[in-house]
Image (cartoon, rainbow, N blue to C red; front, side):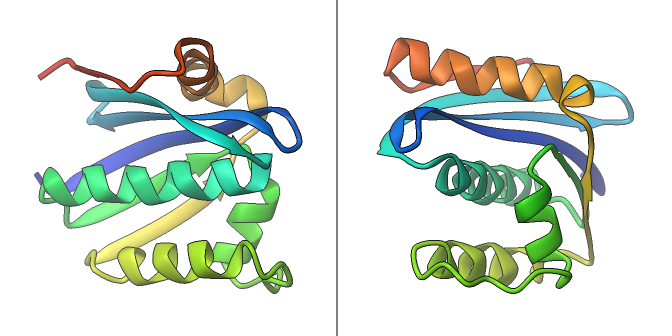
Length: 140
């Protein structure tokens, strides 16, 4: 697998509150994998980073060389791109993990999209919260 596109989202009902993550993995417009997971009680920003980290783990398992990530979290995208500094001590270890993971690929980009363009990842994140169970569905 050479190039993957990830759509990621983290959601929290309450802030902090019950939280879930959702990841959709595509290659050439084809859905390869969808993942949703309940991650316990945490903040929305932590859930967004946890979605990114899990997405990058999945991309590694697919042996991706280049990864493009789309997220509706302006904070995560801007921090990962170096526009914003990470000031929260709670987010710093997650940011560092995501940065380290992103460097393992030959090419890595993370881009902000509006919520409407990230509906499927949002659906998966909310599904993770609703079930409070791990769910993992593969299309391939």
